[in-house]
Image 1: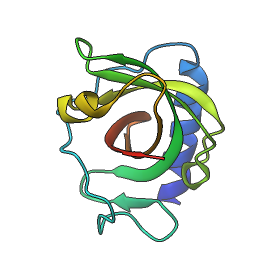
Image 2: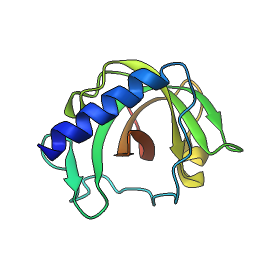
Image 3: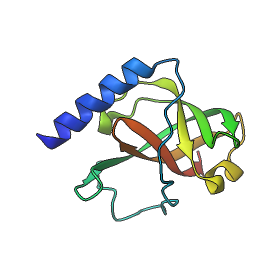
Image 4: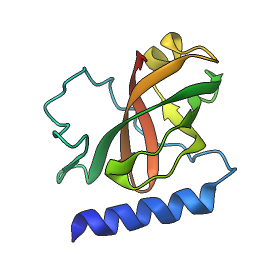
Length: 125
């Protein structure tokens, strides 16, 4: 039931924010490592303590804004959290932003908390 509420909240926030920049998320989350034990076999898991969902996706970087600490990704559908394919702006740590370049095709790890997403790691795809 809790996953459904989080999923519905996320979908509502995404639909409401289409075309708008994501709101800031604080504090920044450290970069995840590939194969992190917090990510389940289906690519998503929840953390009861932080009330966050993690997922992974694939897409193309369309913008990087170090001053705003954001990365914009035209991503494929992220089925594990019910998001359709779209272009979204996410918060990202300076370490993630240093690795990012417009036009790069990437895999990425994502943490969703309170309907807002933060990219925690990127990998070449």
